[in-house]
Length: 31
Image (cartoon, rainbow, N blue to C red):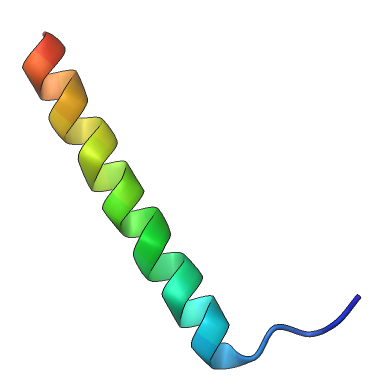
């Protein structure tokens, strides 16, 4: 496996955070 450089890790974490925020928003809208 190739090691991911810190920059890509940061980007991935940021994207995951945005996704989780969207999911929470959708949950709030549906309930």
